[in-house]
Image 1 (cartoon, rainbow over the protein chains, first blue to last red):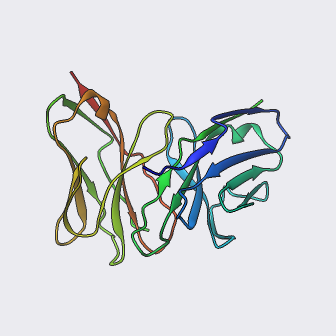
Image 2: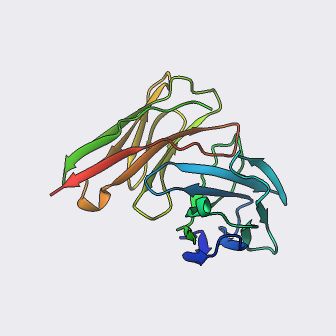
Length: 116
Length: 109
């Protein structure tokens, strides 16, 4: 069964450093998403991406964040200058169809980011 | 986006059928109802999706009444490994999924 993969599974960084979280969506999917989940709390939407453009982003997704599809397979989330509060689990998701079509999003296993 | 309401927690025993009901009174015409399962420190896992009536797959059944203002996820004969958080989501016009707190299901031996 195809699945979304994410690397690394864990990332430790120093405050102020840049990090790039990587995702490989399911191969025939065209819509990509990032979510985050603080331990014990809800899964929160960050950004959606389609056709090399951001479709929608949340208030959390400020100028420190950026997303990119650098090649035909990877989808990345970059945090330019990490803060302590960025320490959380980040999930990538992908879907074959987009909004309004009952799309099913498939999630990766997550990257746990720890900012020291 | 339609808001969903579901019980915060439920307990069950192995072998029992579990039904988790979700309310979504403001569901829109083009909204679908999707249920996800999440284990600790793992990504949400798609369980089932429906628009109306009943949907069944190898894992669960989803019952949606005619007015679509609620839905019920049915898990037949649960086992200890079904202990997880279950999320009911309603989505349609936007690609983003809005997760609530979900229902924490505890299956006991």
